[in-house]
Length: 103
Image (tube, rainbow, N blue to C red; front, top):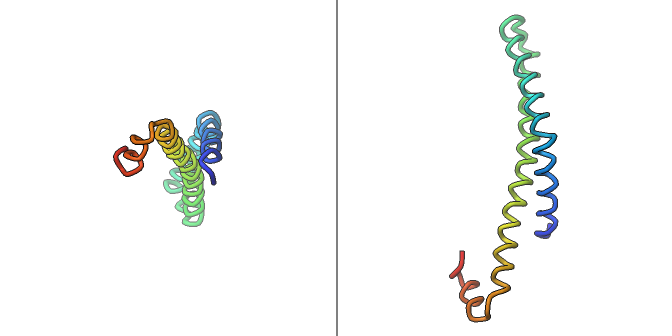
C-alpha cells in the first residue's frame, strides 16, 4: 500500500472509530461483561461463560485491528512529512539528511 492510501485509509478509520465504532465496541463489551458476570454468579454454566468470553475477545480484537490501521496511517503521515521536508531542502542538506543526519 502506498503512503497516500495508508493515510487516506487511516483518516477514514479514525473518523469511523471516533464517531461510531468506539462507542459501539464499548457498549457491546459492556453488555457482554454484564451478562458474563450474571452467568458466572447465578448459573455457573461453563459453556455460556466460554461463549461470552470469546465474544468479548473477538470484539476487542476487531477494535484492535481498526486502531492498528489508524496507527499505521499516523506512521505513514509522519514518514510522508519527513520525505516532503527532505525533498524541499537544498541539495547539500538533503544529502546530509538522507545519510542519517535527520531523524
